[in-house]
Structures are given as C-alpha cells and as structure tokens.
Image (cartoon, rainbow, N blue to C red; front, top):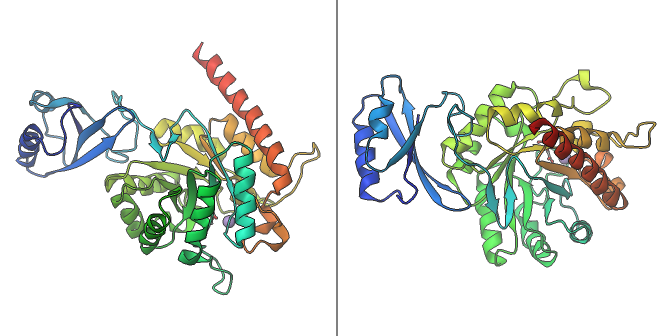
Length: 368
Ligand code: PEP
Ligand code: MN
C-alpha cells in the first residue's frame, strides 16, 4: 500500500508525523517514507511494508494530510503499475528528461581507452546535436587478464571533455559501491561539468548490496541491465531493490539473453519485451543492441544486424538506446567486434528516426 500525502506536505511537517505515528501503531507494518521529486512538485509518499491485508484504506484516506491511498501488489510496489495508480513517473536529470514516452540516444565507447578516442566520440555526438553518451571506466571482464578499464584515474579527463562538448549525461557502469564515491569526487573536483547515470551490468543484476548502495543515493539515476540468465521477474525485482531503497530514477535495459539459441548473435535479442516492461512498470525502457547482437554482420538488404535490432526495439517503443561506437574498432580494448564506426553515426541516427517516427504513427493509430 502507498499512502500519498497532500502535495504541500513535506517529510518534516506535523501532519506527516501524525500520519506516520498512526501507521506505526499498526502491528506488523513498517512505514517507509519517500520524497519523490517530480517536474512540478515534491511529493511525499509512505510505503507500507508488511502484512497490509488488515488495513482499512478508507480510514487512512480520512487522516488529515493524506491525499490518497494506492493498493499495490507485493512484487513491484514502487516501480510497478497498479490499479488506480495515477502517480506520475519519469524524471529529469541534469536537464535531460527520461520517461516512457520520450527517447534518448546514448552512443559512446564501450570502454574508455585513450583521451583522443574519448574526444573524437564526444565531438561526434555533439556534432549530431546529441547530449548523452556511454563511457565505461570500470569493466567487468570474463578473463582476469583482460583490460579492466582505466577506473577512477580516467574520470577527471573524461568529465572535463564531457563539459567541453556539452555532454549532459554519461552512462557509466560501476561494479562496486566504492565507485559511486569515486565518481562523485571526480565530478566535484572538476566542477560538475556533466552528469553520470550509474549502470549496473548484467553480471551484477542480482548483486543486492550494489543495488542497495545505488538505491540509497539519489544523486544519480540508475540504468539496470536485465540479468542475462535469470527470469524477467527476477530482473524486475532487482530494479525494485533500487526503488525500495529510495531511488526511483531507474531505467531498465534489455541487452539480450545468454543462450546458444540466439546464435549467431552474441545474445538472444529480447526487445519484444519493451512493451511488457512498460505495461508492468513505470520505468523507461532502454535497449542495448550492441551487446545483444555482438557483431558487425550485415543483412543482404545492406543494413547491419545492429541497425535491425535497434529498429526492432524502437518501433516497439524503446525510450533509450545504449550503443557502442569506436573511432578504430580494431584497436578497441573491449568489444571492438560489435562497435559501429564514426562514419556510421549519421546513418544510425537517421535509421533510428525512421523507426521512432513509425512507432509514433503506430501509437497514434492505436489511440484512434
Ligand atoms: C556494457 O554495457 O559494456 C556491458 C558490459 O554490458 P552488459 O552488462 O549488458 O554485458
Ligand atoms: Mn561492452
């Protein structure tokens, strides 16, 4: 159950305290208070954890300061869609808005390697009028002897270059909770020239301590990759971990499932789940066609499989694309074989636009 307070009430008001006191007196219930920053106002919501079966909804709704009460399923209490749930979702971070209706492209390097490559990438993004990118500093690698990413050492110059090219949000994977403090320190030291969306990779989807750490901070939104070998329900519960700790700025990313049934692609493309995530939750949905397809194979129609997979996700309503580019894929230290080249960026953006327009036309037709 979610108790939504009147918009003008904040967490410290006496009315809020009285509502909390009332809820705490109910045996077996733990109220958890959340501040939700929307575009227009800050809302205070109280999540009731525990056995809510015996609660009298009308009685709670009658308490002074309570706007309404939403009954939620146990599974995805915060992020899920519930009957009669008109809470508005989506968020704006460092000037960029993310919700289930709009679209943002994050083209960038799988892994930060040289300053020159980072600069070339960011310049190409900026030249297209885009303001988001991906930059991996901490890389989870299968082989312990493979390049592990430059880590904290590269953050100062990556952030400085982001500022130079007007990049507002960098999706950056973290593999340990200490990386959050490293990112915050580097952002502060460089004068906050950009924003960072914390990315939790598919190998860490169920790293619950990492999820809790990302959920406890509210500075950065979180991009959660679907676990490549677990059920959708398990991955959605992982997302709920973030929200249950207080951070509702969560984007869910499909990146293909690990099975040889997807051969010859690196992973089995699962973008038909875009509408499923949207129906079950309020999260914006991202697709990662690079890690799904994993190669630069081209179909007889002249389009790379990566282009096709991207279009499939977008025409199904994806809100974000995370995609690997590299100025010289042959020299890339991570995932070169799947990277698009700089001269493919214009075509890629045009192809996305075709698919996005088709999606919007389909949506319009469905509303008629
Ligand atoms: C990545 O985006 O670089 C990455 C490692 O992705 P995934 O966690 O989906 O494998
Ligand atoms: Mn990669």
